[in-house]
Length: 164
Image (tube, rainbow, N blue to C red; front, side, top):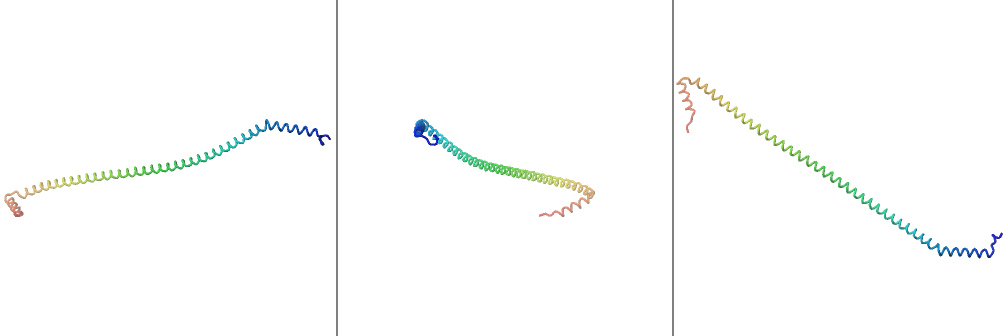
């Protein structure tokens, strides 16, 4: 029962031992432990701040990336639109050029046809005149075989001529 009811000497030496351990802990261990805890707390706080900065930086980079992607999309659409416009312009220019060339060829063909037509008409006229003169010559030879017929014909021609 000695432990249940401690003696004054035991309490005294336990108090002295406790105070000695407390003094030793305070003198040699407490400050380094508190210093280490403070350093640990500071490093954790700095790590949290760094993580927050990194998070903000990632958000900013993500926002910048989205903006760059949007600008790239807009630029791509602009380039595609410009390419479509250039294609349409080239096609319309080619169509106009082909139409102009076709019109030129058509005009040239019409002019050539008209020229050949006039040439053929002139040639036919020439042949008709030649044939008419030949026929008239043969008819006149036949009808003017005698002198009296020739004189009669000359007189009829003179009557047809009107003098002014």
